[in-house]
Length: 347
Picture: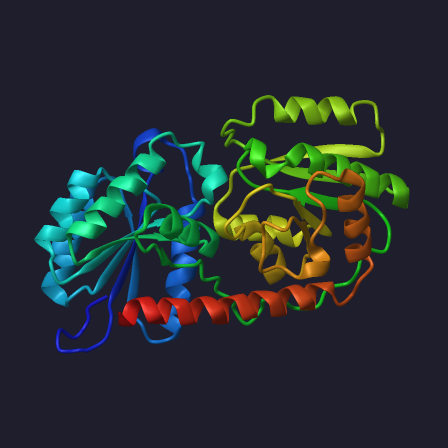
C-alpha cells in the first residue's frame, strides 16, 4: 500500500521471523499476533504493515524500499533473534526510525531459548547507546522486572486482538452427547497439558458423557513424550477419544476452536495466550491459570490442582453468561493495550 509522503503521524512495521522459509515448519503464532495487532492499529487510523522476514538484511532491504514511499516511524521486531550488531547497523542506517524488539514470552518461557536473555541484555546496552532503539515486552510483568533488575526502561507493547463483527456471538450450552474439550498450543512443559488432559477426563467422568479430547500436534518444543503419556492415561477408556490436531493456518484453527465446548489453558507462565482469545471470539470459554491475567477471575483455576481445573470447567460448561464475560474482559484488555501503544507511538 502506498502512503502520502506528506502525511503526518506514525507509520508502523511489525516484523516477525519467517521460520517456514528455511526449515519448512510453520511457527505461525507470532505472525498471527502481528496481523491481529496490525488490524487493531489500522482500525484506529495508524498505517501498519506486517512483514515476514528471514534476516536483518531482509528487513533492511524492505525498509529501504518502504522509506522511499513514505517515512516509517516505528519498526517492532517480534522476539529477540536478530544479532545485536545487525540491529545496531539498522538503527544507524535509519536514524529517524524508532526500533524495538518485543519479547513475547515471560521469563519462564525464555528458558527454552538459551540465547534470548543474552540478546535482551545486549539490546539494553544498545538502548543506552542510541536514541532510536528500545527493548520491549508484551507482558507488563516482564517489562517491570527488566527495568527493576537492569536499571534500564523496558517498553510495554502488549498484544492487540482484533475482534470482528461476528466475534462473541451467543452459542448453545453443552446439553449432552459427545463433549469436545480442546487444549491447544505448542507442546511445552510449562503449558501444563498433562494436567489439562486429566481435568478433561474428570469432567467427562463426572458428567458421564463421551469425550473427544483435542490437542495440538506437530510442534513439540521440549514437551517430551507428552502425547504418549496422555495415551497411557486414556488407554482402555471406551468413552474417550484423543484427537491430535495438526498445525493449521489461523482461519482453519479458528474453525476448530469453534467446534469445541470448552478449552483448557492452565499454563504455568504466559504473557497473553492467543488460544484463549480465539475461544472468546468463537464463544468458547476457557479454564485458565492466574498467568493469563486479563481473563475473567472466575475462569481461573489452581494451576497444579486437576480437580479444581475440572470443577471450574464444569461450572463454565453450564454458565450461559461465561462467554460474554470473556468477551468483555478481552474488550477491556484491548482498550488498555491500545492506550499503551498510543503512548509508545507518540513518544
